[in-house]
Image (cartoon, rainbow, N blue to C red; front, side, top):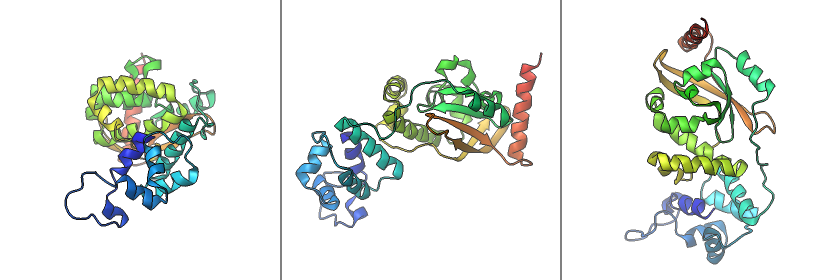
Length: 275
């Protein structure tokens, strides 16, 4: 929590909150501690104890005031509250998710949405199940044993990902920001994956130190696929209540060039599966 607050404080300048910058260069990037404390309505000493990790039970009201001044998003505010629960030893607001296989209902959905590529992912982006088009959309993902398939590991460590994602940097940042949310729901598995990726990728390590937090939501992803060529697909994220899992589907409206590309991808999968 101390690292999160310190980094976020460094990203908000005095001018952003209506304070004068004063003469000369500032030695501290972003807001000073006393400035943040004053804007949040707490004493400087109290805020310093929070940022140094010496305050073990900051209230929701204080954290809400800090979130307001630091201009945290809803995901970042929820992350800050969850970190405070960990510091205070309180019961987590979000129940930790157990590692479990994809249920039969989600596996049936994977088949039902074909030819749309689809995956069942857990909190740390382990691929619990995927339909054939899903594995074909990310070349090389299926080469790993089922227990080692992870979309964030694929993004940073598989050579094919660098050319597959037209905006690799954006995909990488979004993946790391989503992984931050798993610190509260799957802390042990998150720590193991982070340790692996920090050791193997300096780019991942640099992004992880930024403490960006954002849950994965619907959007678009641009691909440069070796079979179907350049195409941009919408993605939808469905979260079964209480499962700790989500269904990620890439799709396109029927009759469009993008949908035709998905049909072509499905045909290549069928060609492979047919003797």
